[in-house]
Image (cartoon, rainbow, N blue to C red; front, side):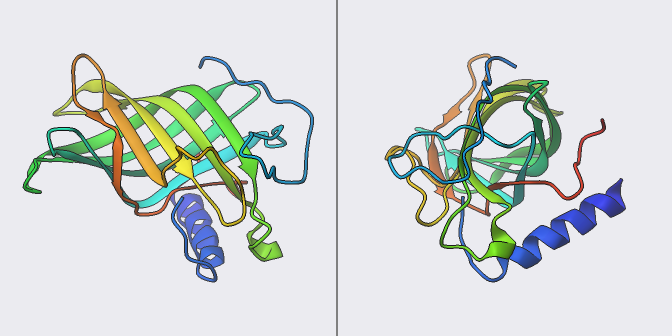
Length: 201
């Protein structure tokens, strides 16, 4: 599994070397296929059966108290079964940038996914990369041992998205934890048609 995952990430990253950019189980409603990205900031009908979310570097968001939360990882969104899997690592820093805690995380439940299609500005070999937004519930492992709501945004050139979209992630810690709702640094986030799905069948 790890060999496949590493090869998959290498393939995706080689495709991204040509163009540098940063991007981001309740109800999902796949509809009819549309091969043309929207131009009005409205989500298009999804033609993806399985989409990968990939954060190859730490993406940070900031809370109102100045603390930051960084997260990286990868996994798959399976639309017809409305499921999500995968995970990665996280780090929680204080307002001075000193580490408070760190650990691993796992995806638990897909809450929503909207895709806006690939970018017409990218070459044909990079048309497997999609603009989109996903919201999922994840579990932060020890020492946090708490659930959180993770929102991932991916914005690509010449694909219209809602004006309020940032590029990166936001995360809200449940049970009274901080709400890291300001994107401060993107290590890169994107959605893609997977060559090798991370999640088991």
